[in-house]
Amino acid sequence: MSEARSLPLQGVKVIELGTLIAGPFCARVLAEFGAEVIKIESPDGGDPLRKWRKLHQGTSLWWYAQARNKKSVTLNLKHPEAQEIVRRLAADADIVIENFRPGALEKWGLGWDVLSKLNPRLIMVRLSGFGQTGPYRDRPGFGAIGESMGGMRYVTGYPDRPPVRVGVSIGDSIAALHGVIGALMAMHHRNVNGGRGQVIDVALYEAVFNMMESVLPEYDMYGFVRERSGASLPGIVPSNTYVTRDRKFVVIGANADSIFKRMMNAIGRADLANDPALAHNDGRVARTEEIERVISDWVAANDLERVLAVLEKADVPSGKIYDIADIAQDPHYAAREMILDHRLKGGESLKLPGIVPRLSETPGATKWVGPALGEHTAEVLAALGYSGEQQRGLKERGVT
Image 1 (cartoon, rainbow, N blue to C red):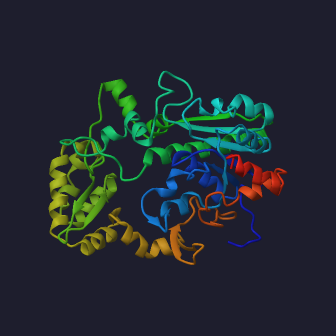
Image 2: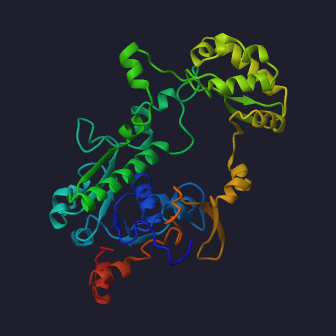
Image 3: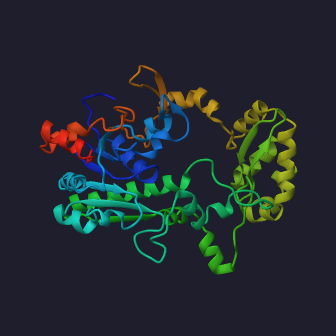
C-alpha cells in the first residue's frame, strides 16, 4: 500500500478497555483500517492474551496479530487517577470498546452515564456474555457459553455423540464483528444524520443466535428441532465431506439442481442424473442415504487429485479440507496477499494473516505488530499534558 494513500478510518480515535478476544478483536479491525486505537492494559502483566497459546520469547504469537496497530498504555483502572486519565482520553474519542462484566465500568466511574456527558458524540461498544439488561446480565459469560446458549454448539458434531466446539473461538469473533458493524453504523448516523453518540450492546449469545439460519421459524412452524448432522449440510443434498483413497478429506457441494446433474454424469451415474425424482432438493433429501453412498464409494475409489480434477472439469464446487500447512503453501493465498511477512523487534520474521475485507481504494494495513506492554504510555500521557515528572509520579503511585 502506498504511504500516501489514506486509510478509511484515519482520524478516528478508539479507546479499548477490553481483554482477551471479543473486545480486542473488535478494536483490531478498526485499527487495521486506520483508527488510532489506544489499548488500556493492567500494569500487572497486561492483557492475558499476551500469554495464551504458543509463546515466542515469552509473548503469545496470537498477540502479534490481535494487537497489531494498537498503542499499549498501562493503567490500573482501580486507581482513581487512572480512571481520570481514561475520562480525559474518552473526552475526545470517537469510540470506547469494552468487554467487562456489566457494571464494572460503572463501579470505576467510567460508565456510559459519565462518559457520554463528557463527550455527547461518543459511541460505546459493550460486548458481554448476556447483554447489559435482562435476568442473566450479571452472569460471567465467555464465548463457549454464548455458542451454547445461542444454539451453535447443539447442532455441531455427530448425532450419536455429545455436541462439540468449533476449533476456534468463533462466538467471541462473531460478537466482535457485530460490534464493528454497530460502531460503523453509529458513526455514520452521528456524522451524516446529525445524531448523537450511542451504546452498541452486543451479547455474545445473541450474536451467535443471529447466525442460526432458519432454526427458529422451523421450530415455531413445525416444532422441528435441528439436530447434529456431522459434516453434512442438513436438509440440503448432497453437501458433505468425503474420504479419498489416499486418506484425504474433500468437501463437495453439489446441492444445486444443475450441479447435482453434472456431478452424477461426471462420476458415471447418468441414471441418477436423469432421474426425475432427484431433479430437485426435496426429492434428493428423501433419498439422502442412497446418494451419499454413491458419492462416498466413488470418492473412496479415487485419490484426491483425480477427485478434484473430475469435479473441477464438471464445474462442481469441491475442495480439499486445508490444514494450516496447506494454507501456508497455497498459491492463491499468496497471490491475494493473505499471508504476509512481518518483522519482530528482534529481527525475526513472522507470518501474519492479511487484512479482511479488501478495499480497492483504501485497503487496510499492518503498520506494526502487537506492542510491548506499556510501549505507548509516555506518548499518550504526554499528549494529555502530563510532564515527565508527573508521569514518574503516576508510576510510583501504581497508576501506570
